[in-house]
Length: 107
Image 1 (cartoon, rainbow, N blue to C red):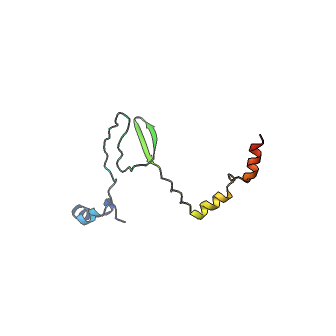
Image 2 (cartoon, helix red, strand yellow):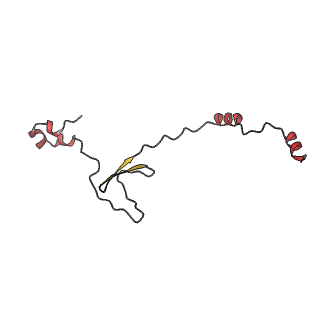
Image 3 (cartoon, helix red, strand yellow):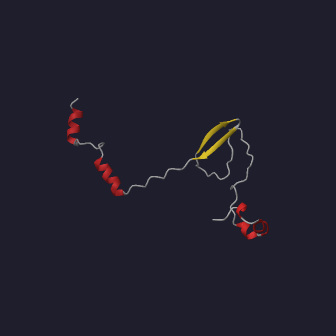
């Protein structure tokens, strides 16, 4: 981990470009102004299509956007698992065709 600038001797951080290159910046994106369009949409830097964010109104014309984590997509079932689920399903008829014909024709 790189030391903080305040921990280095003044001569080291003032004149050494090598040390300054290894110090992490304070933020990824500088502060920027965005403008909402007619539909109240804004472009958020670093957001990807499909990202879901929580909007928190802090009052006094300030708000916070918090990116919510995406749930893991469910694993796809294998053919054997699908066939076993169909076989165990309660949606299958337990009545034979002959009995069904007899019940429906006698009306």
